[in-house]
Length: 168
Image 1: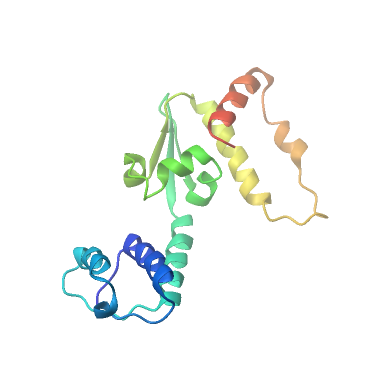
Image 2: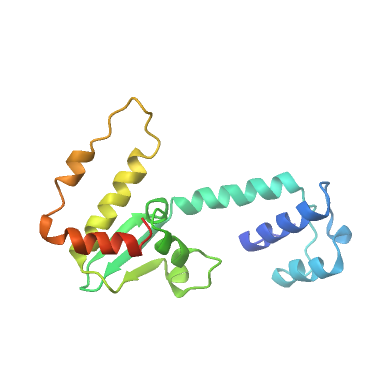
């Protein structure tokens, strides 16, 4: 039995979904796909089941959301947050995506070179606020005024520009 890397699982799931929906053995997979699979671990033979592969991909995505990532400001402040919180920002999400090939994805560190610590802190506070209240029902009250009171007026414009750049 061989172990498949998450990227191989996703690739295999995509390819198997396009070919047929049945259980495949390594000998039944077309040669061009087999070469890709064997490149990770030579000589393994495992029966692939499409639903198992998709479940494995979903489990790795869920465990990835619970990873911690580091966000650093240009003045040396560093913040640790859960990946699911950091993924609220489109820019950070793309940078930390393991399939993107960016160095940030390898080190699990995003450096916000354009922003000072106070701005990064307020962006992260908003992302935590949004992640916390994301699944609140319509009748439950979200304390928006409480969040707005914590933003000093002198940084509002800088914070607005940073939030726009971060796709939040």
